[in-house]
Image 1 (cartoon, rainbow, N blue to C red):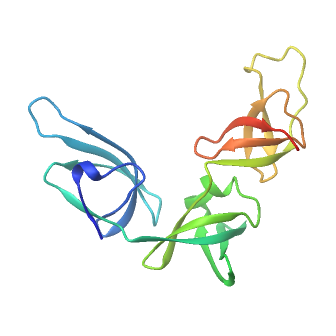
Image 2: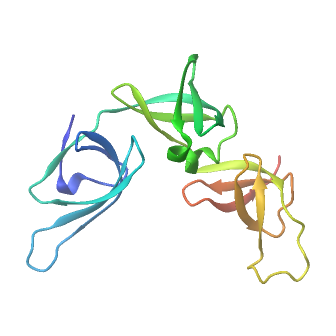
Image 3: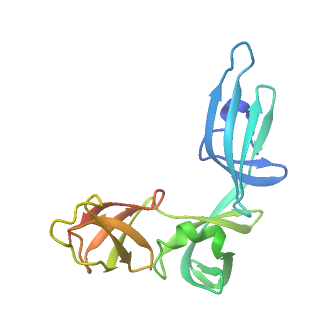
Length: 191
């Protein structure tokens, strides 16, 4: 395991903090007047999903977490748990509490491949693509002259997620969604 100094703790890295793996969501190094530099970070606990803000000072170091990856397929969500099966070994099934992975699972259709982060050979959390293409299941018809709402309407996608889309989107259209922000990016043309 690599030892990281305070200025090497960057967004996207996974570190050991209090003997648990944390993903670095943001990192900002700054110096206040005559003081020594500080790295102000926002960390997400991989096990429970709790987000904390921690400042690392110039003399502090942390170790990089020994995080592995595994390919898996999303199966379904039921009774507060989201289930997955390892790719190539469907007998190896595991679940996460729905509230810890809901922001990612809402964009997944059954049998969608995902990347699972593992720590000490135990599944911790999932990573999905930044952009996904989903079919619009239900969208209210556009009403002529209804641009008060900024020219958008609330549409339901095939996964059950709801997202604001432009007025020209209809049921059956394929739209591209940014999974980080949960926003519509563009309509995909069928080829």
